[in-house]
Length: 393
Image (cartoon, rainbow, N blue to C red; front, top):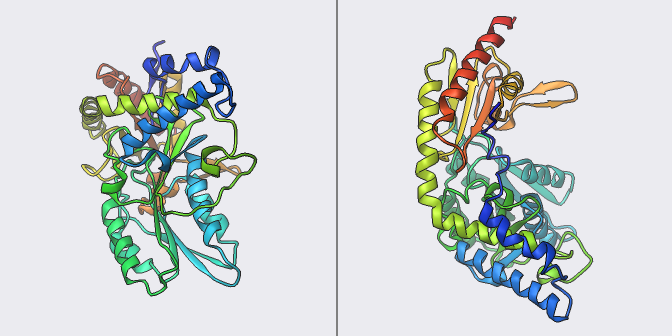
């Protein structure tokens, strides 16, 4: 049975060119990049060359790039790093995020709620899953030190108004009476890198997180852009690597792979956008022929590779499992927690009713998908939805 992989927002296949760029650093150039001998310096040079490539992608200085183990660490380092640096005894600070962030952001903010010196606000979103900029503006306080909003949502693909939010941040900075208290803007760009422009100066962000395994590089590597004037504290200790901000022996092969993947993204972005958008349009056209179906997201203001669709009277995880039996991999926004099925927090924040949210699946395309997979998916979905609705109470 031919396998069809439609879960590219969860992870992607490693590009052959990326793998080939990495291989020498597993076997021949395997030295520790922080060793002083010539082999170590060769590995060190590979990292610095990679850092330059990543910096060029984001339009920043190479010294503003910190390599990490992935987006979760990048997000934690950005958020915790800023807060730890500014947290002082008997002085309350305020931080803001949106209600539809990835868990690696939301859970950090929720954990900070336990600290009596930190107040937390969550910006609401529209029915299309887009942050309400006016409502976000009203949340900004004189002691707000950080706003963290993702570039594009991982479940529904809605693209956030990053430049508008950056303008709000800049306006709030200028109006601030307490000049010693900074206000920083962090962007989780994990889902955006393949399809959106990520020049940090044009976007106006101070920190930006990315992950390798979403862009055809391996798992276990990511990067964080930290603007030169942004002060953060490390969240792990043990060495002086990455400008004393991220201790640990550098993952040379994966760092090289990340840089190679970004170079390929730059080269092939326009072609890949056209390809996945064409497949997405074909799938959505067929999906809208189903009864009791709805597409979740922002339509045109949405990533070209993500489809979030809800089927009434058909539970999302059951759809996923039956499609898997047909050799088709998708994902679902629902999650089993403590024996109870809970709807996606993203769809809930968008105001999607539980009966629809429970029947949602995410189809996420990548550059290795093709149009010939569309009729196979639709046929399997027709069979699956009919089966589940026939047995639904």
